[in-house]
Image (cartoon, rainbow, N blue to C red; front, side, top):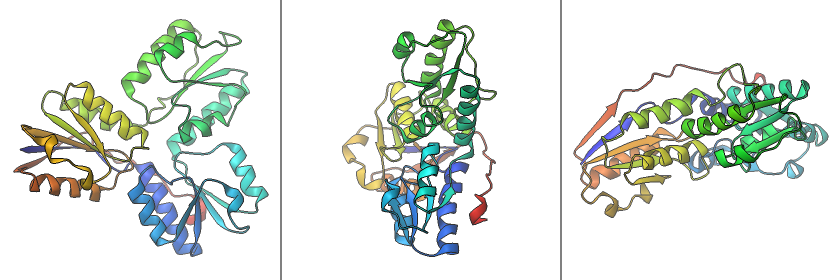
Length: 306
């Protein structure tokens, strides 16, 4: 059995920035440091930070006054910043800069009196944060069917934004419907789907027809990991999303000649290494990294932890 490892894979710049923000806050301010929501969608990363002294909460009401609280890479609505002020908390914003860009666009479009059509999944925390910028002006559209049905007050004043971790192909199908229905549609100055999401999806597409089974290593809560699994399955071969090596099932690999492996943008490389080791135990004799688009982007840390 042969294993092909996609590149790029794993941590993106926004995830690295968010994790380092928590680690530096712990060093600078001491234990505990509170984090609203999972800092990134990966339970292994969260558990590691918990062991270092981070406390993850969904509600700021239970955080002691005077504490430091970090907002996750997915971003939060303006109301969350207001809550932190009311509870006398020291807020540190670890939102990925590419998500912040979408928030800025939402405010800009709302200030111009436009209805915002946000392509994304309504229950995802990133989408909840963007909607919070202009809740009375934002409509979430997840599918081409919803795009066909959505109604707006004024078709001349419509703008579109996109969740950063979507399937590029699916988002384009929704976008095409919206462009047809609303010829005056205003779009962002630059693509919203982030570079890391796009690059990882392109790496999977490049191996279409070359693998017999896909393993995507990532958390079930990770949007970009789920999109990678769907993309692998779209090529007509089995595709499994696993958090770690303990979830591999030997029967998956019966008769499989080549396994393709990628990992979501919040998956540590240690998880990939453990899966590869388990595959060696199951009979893999050759492991090859497949060259992909180099990623050199880095983001500066939030000011309070620099």
